[in-house]
Length: 442
Ligand code: SF4
Image (cartoon, rainbow, N blue to C red):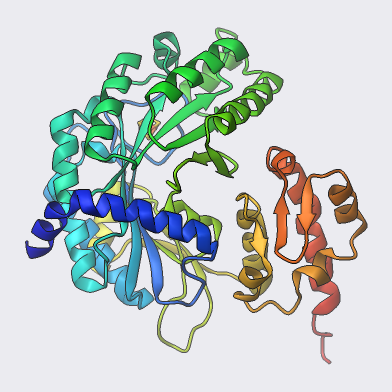
């Protein structure tokens, strides 16, 4: 357990370094791990929850009991296998998500980190995030997670209104959430993120902004705003269908988002991504890897990854999806060393579509340098420079295309989904013109 001790001892220093490194990454504005590099981020999925939230359609299970030692062994085995298959030499961030990973024992978190550190280079200042639900994360557990190597917390606070929390089926109250937040800030200063939801049934703009302002008096340097999405198969969806709850109003949600981002900006937060806000450089390095289309490995039931497997002269980036259901996933890991259910090689155009759709989510957008890292046959100027639709978006002030690259303006970031339709079809058209499909029999 040498690794464990080292991480525990330097956790406070590591937290400071994580913050400093994020600032550097922010300045550098470069991709953390382009495809085919030997660097990657690692996502670890803990699939279990205490109770089903009324809006949730994630891959999660409410078990009678969990054989945690068995799950731990499988997470460790799968991490080792995927690290070997990917040839990754350096893991730059680890993210324990779920489900509710704060229900896992700190020992499990430590075991996974130790396996990663043994298999590859995991620098002491790598960002290691754990998603925590207020009721499963009292102070003593948070301290144990810190000792296990976690140096950043993402708290699923969701609302500061008890009626809303009940509607969402959360297990915590507003005061539980604030207590957890205070404790987390004491243990992980500068490295605590909170999630706040908007667009709930019957939610009004004024009171919601009141919650956000209250949160700003209590929070650390990172806030994520998520709009409720009503998913088929959830209890909330049924209640709305049956008319026992009003349908969420998309216009009110859009107003909350617009007003909320303005409030956050006034409070000194940079909106560095559609849903994410940070001050003092506290950007999430891990999520930045996703938005920059860097490599990442996904470990655990239903986890997703994107990396270039080693061997057979392969240079193709693959999407990998692990088996969803935990018991089946464990059987496969025990048999094969991993529970990969699906591998989908990504074509060149698909990769560029991802680079575009993910990169534009950030305020930095896609720099020319970043685009070139994916070795495209066309430049950003080739694709967008002469497009009439893009010219209109530029004139409307929603988009910018210049010597730095392509990016959304502040106004454009709020309506990215509607811009993307035009931009993706522009890319596809240019691609077809530049790379005509082979003539059959020719
Ligand atoms: S805690 Fe998270 S993953 Fe679990 S049911 Fe609630 S929203 Fe879903």
